[in-house]
Image (tube, rainbow, N blue to C red; front, side, top):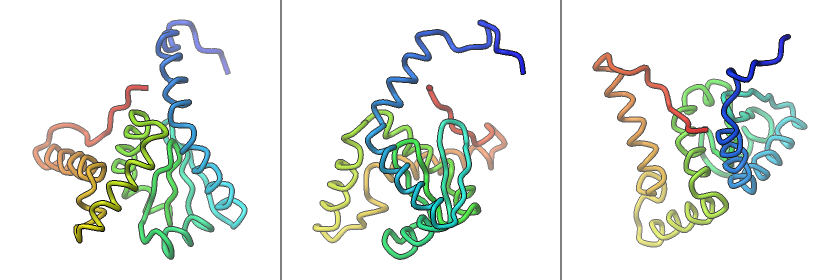
Length: 160
């Protein structure tokens, strides 16, 4: 396989920005990689999509089904899901959370949990009313409107 020509590579500033974004989200990505290691050691599978790793089955299925009560969860640049179908169905939503980790860095997980805790203590829906989920669901709704109107391809654009 031939090496990419200089014109095929991102400019140095783009590579530096990508490296910075990956480092900024790395504390959460480390947790995701630990979940991925547990998933792989318990019979799970791994896939690479864009700039994320996705794990499903094994530990991820157990954790999401019994502890988190979710189909998928994002930890930095790692997405864990119960099944490959769950990963496919939730991928675009979870990519919104990847972008949130890229913006918030190590503060994302505490901010997400604090927002959920605050809502729960007030008797509100700690998932659907969480501002981070509101952003992800709004993106889901926008893509669905575009799909129904025939505009756009429903994809998510990444800056990295």
